[in-house]
Amino acid sequence: MESYSFLMYLAVILISTKVLGLFSRKINAPAVFGAIIAGIILGPSALNLISFDSQDGIFIETVAEVGVILLMFSAGLETDLDEIKKDGKASFVAAMIGVIVPLIGGTLCYLQFFHTTGGKDEMLKALFVGVSLTATSVSITVETLRELGKLTGKVGNTILGAAVMDDIIGIIVLTIVSGMKDASISIVVVLAKIVLYLVLICVLLFITSKLRPIIERGDEKRRIVILTVAFCFILAFVSERYFGIADITGAYFAGLMLCSMKVRKYISRRVEIASYLIFSPVFFASIGLKTSISGFDLHMLLFCVALLVIAIISKVIGCGLGTRLCGYSGKESLQVGVGMISRGEVALIVAQKGYQYGLVDNTLFAPIVLVVIVTTLITPVLLKIVMKNDDGDAEKTKI
Image (cartoon, rainbow, N blue to C red; front, top):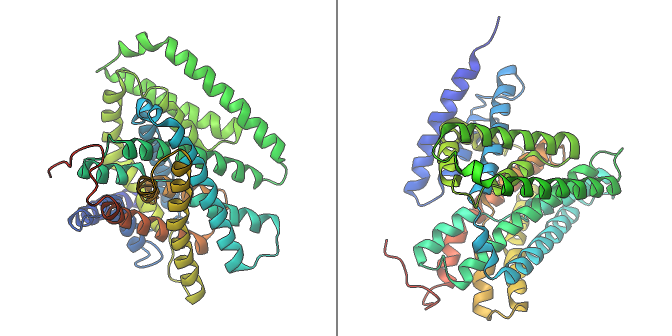
């Protein structure tokens, strides 16, 4: 007999994520973490109402995968290339060092706590823990900078540019690490595929730029949304299937190709409706559903605390050092470093992909999710402290 439990699963997820999302807003926390907590409550850590083992659970997991692709497509659409060009050198240097330091820190943290024998699988797990610390949440930092009136200043532009570059570099590193998971594939083949993929992206960027007048004539028309979302799915499929590149990378580049066009706002609004209604809540709830904190012992708790400390310090040192090398003052460098602490949605997406690739199991998944939650919650507080009494580039916005 065919099961229709997936309908009840969807209803429970949508209601619980909305209720807890609203509660998160009440305590000045991002709504996304209410959705994650809803998943934790519904999953094996608490009520165990929804499982991915059944056919209905597989359907929920598939919906979550569509959700993450739409999220990255939207992130590409919302990328402001003009902002990235401002203070571009400082942003790039901060992003590079801000990826390298957390990557090394997270890897060494895993190796220290789990005393691995040095096998390939264990080294890949260690590298993935490092990769999970490389991403930066743009949305949380942007909201705080806007509140402080610093969004368009020197520090604000640098943080925005570095955060976007951080995510791109982090996803590329994830692609390399995940490619190494397959023993039959050499690192040379992985790097060759990445080079070919970048060539493909450049060709598509050229083609879309030439088609810009035709694409922009479709502004405010539903057909343009359907065609661009289809393009997003095709590029996501081609990335994963033929190049071994994460599908979320293809989705991000699909949005990036359209981000400077007039149709961007219309496409973004329409995609956001579908994402907000079903796909995003299911994705963020699925993060919680995969998180099991029932097996937490003292050793794992200490690992989680150590990983959290490294997550904070590595971004402050890495990104702060990068901007200091570019001539920023000590205070400005500290502000950029603190502004980059928040991990947010992209780190959750990276964690999800690592789980799918077998780079992280249930034991490691929970500490990574908890680090993401804590860093995102404390970043606005720390950012307000380091920018207190700062005359900066812009006046504070009244709220």
